[in-house]
Length: 544
Image (cartoon, rainbow, N blue to C red):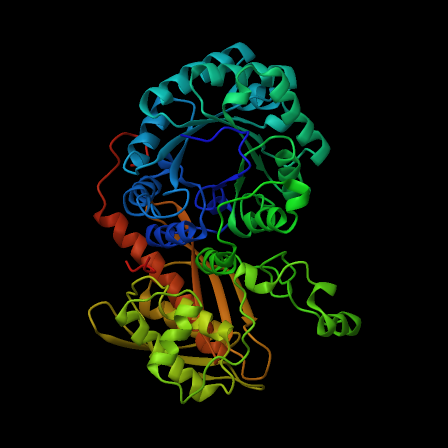
């Protein structure tokens, strides 16, 4: 059951796997969601919104698996295992589907919502205010009959008439809601307005002092974190956030920003969280890797430049004392400051020890594969840093089972001349296939050769390349997005990632990874049973 708002601890409700996945192109498959969910347990989130079960068969299955496999984890944490939540519109079909998915977790929650702004009531729902209140009362009561932990959200609360909002919230409390979430759905409010709204709710809604008040902010005006902090200062004791601030449009409130603001300024906010801050950076990288959404260099807390100091006056101050220009230490959020980690003469034991220090607890088979890649990297790169090790792990271990493997890549390119690529892949049955193609550039030629072998229609939507570290021998990290036919027959986006010292190899690996996900989705759809009712959505992991 949720804690009363008088607590001095703020509950962290992470919705990366639901609202965050709605970020354009940030599609996650089932195994990737499980992997992220396990890391969220290590991070210490209190509530994990695992998905929107009625949205699709795949979403239902993913939420159910998270409830079964991840829900029991973390029981030895100070605050126990996480609550697994499923989102549902305020109707019986949605609520039934959500409950059926989350009920397998030791601690589970139904999160139901209905819009309360006149804009949504008139133009989207086409119902009256009276009908809205009646539906909230009926559906929250129905959810509470299934599950003792029910959260209700009046969608677009930030643009709702406050007096009507009070009526809606009172109805939800009387029907059995244990958490009231007041979302700024379109990022419209300012910190002063949003904070004042919660003060007004506490003063005008009977029973508001007996339940948890929650904030859910979007970043359309760049105010999501500021609004969330203002809500905390006005009695909110649950915040709904995502890793890296991903989400629809301009995104959601960033978990790392809120948590570190509370951690760094305890004298201002006077509250704590159950988050292990040393897991923040690792979680950020994992989510970025799987979603294919890169982290901007100047992103607060987790960006590449967050702890970099280039200006001479800053460097001089840092050399004298880190507090001159750093309000938090990089190791507090899990950013290692080790420059040279290991070398070509380092053994398996030393490599394994460093992996443990970086927070990776791999199986023997995974560690062996990573060690082999590490030794190969040492032959190509003089200085191997922690960033290189992390990229290597992401590329070697955190990849889905592959249908096709890259065996050889030969590229001829120059000016004048026509870029040509020859690619050899090993297929699902062990057969080898080789194709050559010409393109407008070396990457285009390689991708066309891969397409000739795999033969799956797709469209390349996005191609990103970054150097992991400085220097001419830096590893290249490439992420791509391709569009193809998803498991439900509709167009879907698939992400791929590759990291190598050879940029063209990294690019080809990234494309191949995305196509492997596309092939896997089509294969999964071919063998999956149809949904139970019309319109209803029915690995390898990092060890704990």
